[in-house]
Image 1 (cartoon, rainbow, N blue to C red):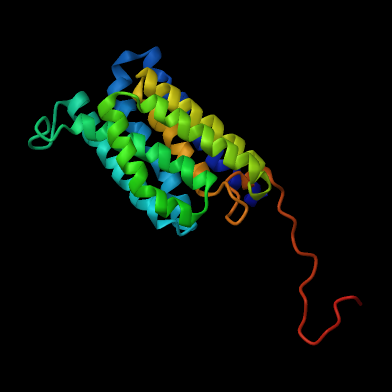
Image 2: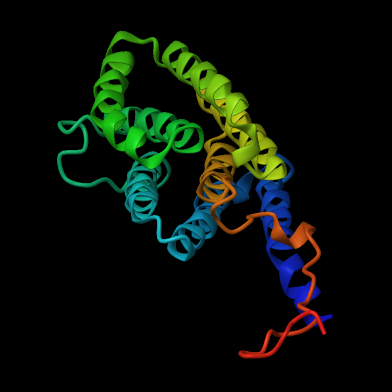
Length: 228
């Protein structure tokens, strides 16, 4: 019973955070606070990456969180780092977000070796797409390539996690390119990271709280026949 309660805790916390993010729609004075509270959602992919020993994801999550926090601090609180404008921090935000989202697609669709080879290419194309103003088109193309690759290897995925990743990633992308409320982007962005870390069958199931855990009926004893 205690185990069932603990496994339901995460989805309940995620749902509670999402409901809190809706509060500024009826109480506009809470908007600034909620825009920063949403970064709590980044703890979930951070812990999932720690548990899966995905250290590339850890650095990506940390740097992405810092970049978005600095941008929000300047926009919401008018408290900026030195030479914020000279460093073109807003462009850095776009560059890194575009790269992080394409990186997520490659991590889900390809193996580790292919991702490592593609990293410098993704960085270059991300910079180019932002400068030329076709980052949405670039993300759509990468998404289609990743989708085809994923369909060809569908047996290697937890289907529920794969669908969850696709829904969260698509929602985050639409919010980002529509330039809607950023707190909703950060929320779905964080969940995209969480699903991406454990979407493949060689990792722990992210949605394991939906799967009943069967206890082992007996334990094999050394030098004893197990068919008795």
